Image 1 (cartoon, rainbow, N blue to C red):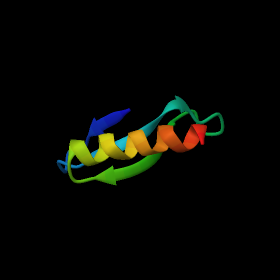
Image 2: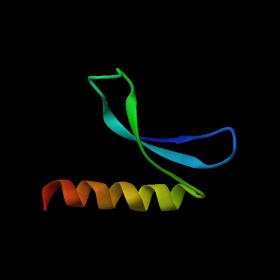
Image 3: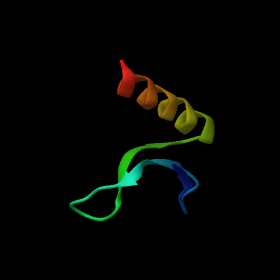
Image 4: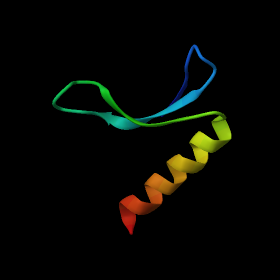
Length: 49
């Protein structure tokens, strides 16, 4: 899940909530939405390899 921050950056959050905190994990902050989408694809790849 990608959200735009007030600073104009984009942050990648996990799809599921963290059971300990009840919130989504921050998986990185990026300057552009394209960079965040690319990183999300990389994360999904490594979940299966």
